[in-house]
Every structure is written in structure tokens, then in C-alpha cells.
Length: 137
Image 1: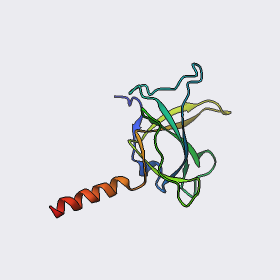
Image 2: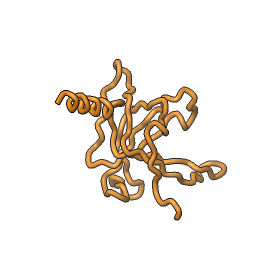
Image 3: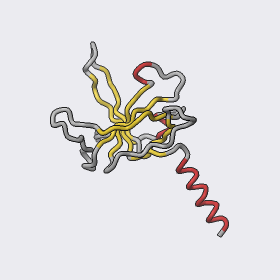
Image 4: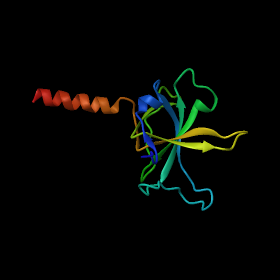
């Protein structure tokens, strides 16, 4: 059986050193000028501009866009120390490989998708609090 569609992947696999969001904007269909929608869910697509915290990332690999399908614009975590960077983690990440033919020769490229945006460690904090509450009972 051939693999169809995006491949699920853990956030830590894509961004082992973490990631910082710069902003988020709606993705507009180039031809219709209407908001682009996710083919599977029908929800509007949003592009989160991300900087990879990997010190070895260079060029195009340093700055990427992660597409998030959501009814409303995803809310980014608060800025850190007044900098324009916001540490983020993505829920439900997936990688979609495709052939990029815009350069001198075709190459395999990847589109990143996610189902949500959160503050780093938010899920672990909630799990820890729930575990502590369970232990206290």
C-alpha cells in the first residue's frame, strides 16, 4: 500500500531545538482571492511564520511556515522579554512531501501542517497538574 497524504510526525522530530513564531496570517487562494481551506476538514488555513531554534539551520531551513487548519485565527503565546519571538509548540504535526520545480532543478521539499498552536510545555504542565490532583484525592 502506498502512503497517501501527509505523514504524522512529532513536534520534537521537526523542531528538536524548539521553535519561535513571528506571526500568523490567513492563507489566501491565489486565483480566487478567497481564504484557502483545508481539503480534509474544510476549515480555513492559517500560516504561522516560524524560526527554527536549531543553531545549525541555515538559509531556507531557518525560517518556515506551518499551516494550521482552524475556524479562527490561532492565538500565539505571549512574547518573551519584549522580543518579537514567541516560543511555540504545535499539536498534531504532519509533513507533506512534494516536488519543488521552481529552481534550476527539481527537489523534494516539505510542507508542514499542524492542528493547533500552544505554549511550549503547556500539555506537560496540565498533565502534571492533573496527576497531582489525582494523587491528592
